[in-house]
Image 1 (cartoon, rainbow, N blue to C red):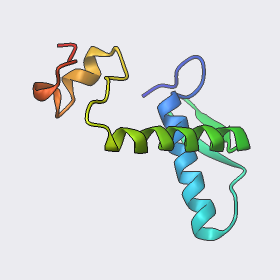
Image 2: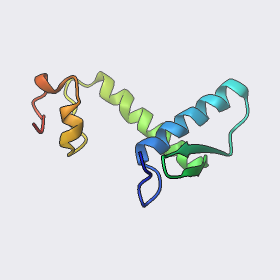
Image 3: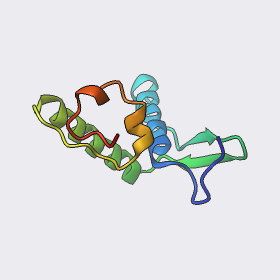
Length: 95
């Protein structure tokens, strides 16, 4: 799709950061940036220390969620609920 007016989608930035972290680990060289291609433009996203720290914080939150028995829904998007494979069993579904 097209890039948002404000830049890249946050989820795309964190996915790119995860790829950068994997490249760094696998090849022993830290990428300076990554590229996100949208239909209408190519965005260059710097792989900064801050972005890496944000990625690590998100991963830590995900690990906590894996061991918790009850995790709250983290969005207000009906379209995300509509496409979710767990919606029928979810007590927080929007639809």
